[in-house]
Image (tube, rainbow, N blue to C red; front, side):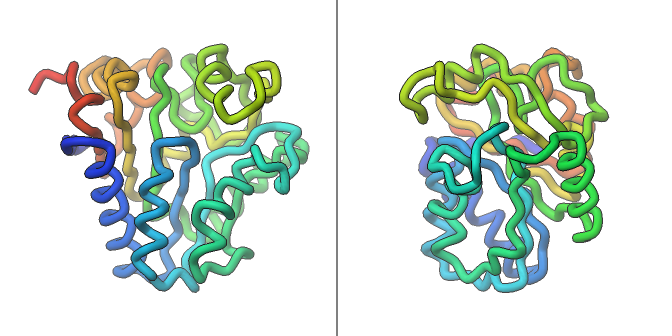
Length: 238
């Protein structure tokens, strides 16, 4: 696991976009794993500005809220279309987001099978929750978990409430790639910025590997990059 510390969120976004761009250029038919939330928004803006050729790229997103249609403005399919897919020359048929409306057991199996059929994920982008969740894999999640339905913790619901009218409107469950599914990626890029992520970053990088810190399982991955800004890295032993 390699840790890269940059000055601020802007530099983190530039570096993340650079890493993803290199993958798109070096492997025009690459399979990318993508994330949502506030952290990667600037990264996606930069990627759009680079005018890369996405025509043969395939993408798989980490997760989706349960019981939300893909056309709903709070869905992660809507997020990805709005922030990336609608602005690049990617074939929408090659972009995959789990269905929050499907039977989660059937959809989870279908999704993992689709990733396998595509040849596996070449580069997986991850964000980091304040409780060190990755995807929607909350503390207590199994290291070997596959894609399926998960319950969201109060802290995650609170963190995501800013995107909804109120916390009561945030779905209580989601379908997410499991930690086991994530760890199968050939390369992983986790990005985090801001002081609120500092403890999670410290636990991820320097803590013991435990289900209490889902992101800590990245320590076992042979090709993981942890890209953080100075604020998120402030608790690390330099």
